[in-house]
Image (cartoon, rainbow, N blue to C red; front, side, top):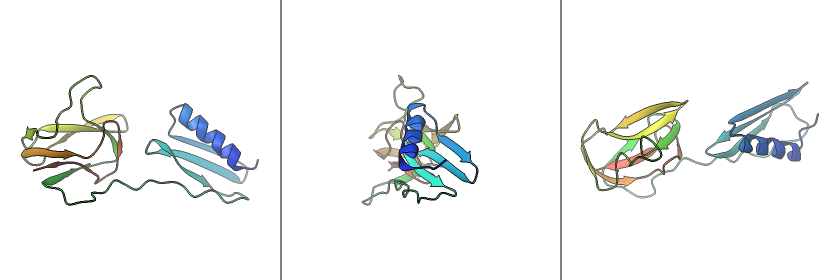
Length: 146
C-alpha cells in the first residue's frame, strides 16, 4: 500500500467527519498517523514511506501582542476553554466584572474532566482572551485581572 496525498486527504476527511482525534494505520513497513489538533487536522506523519509527507500545519499558541493591564490568568493545562458551566448558562465572568481570589472564572476541559479555574487574585476582569469552546495550551493567557 502506498500512502499518497489523495489517500491521506480521504483519511483526514474521515477524521473530521467522525469527530475523531487520531487515526493510525499500518501496512507492513509503512505506517501513518493523523491527529486532530486545534480543531483542524494538523499533523500527518509517515513513519516509513517512499514519498515525503507534507509539512504539518501547526498553529502557534495565541500570544499577547501588546502590554496588557493586570495580572494574566493562564491555563494550567492543555484542554478546551468554557466560559460557562453549561451551553445555556450565563458565563462565570464578563469583562468589567469584579472577582475575588478563589472565585471560579472558567472551566478547562481536559480528557473529559471539567477543571474549574479560579481567580488567583482579586480584581476586575479587564480582558478575556479566549473564545468559548476554543482549545487552549498550557500557559496560554485566558484573561487578565486588574
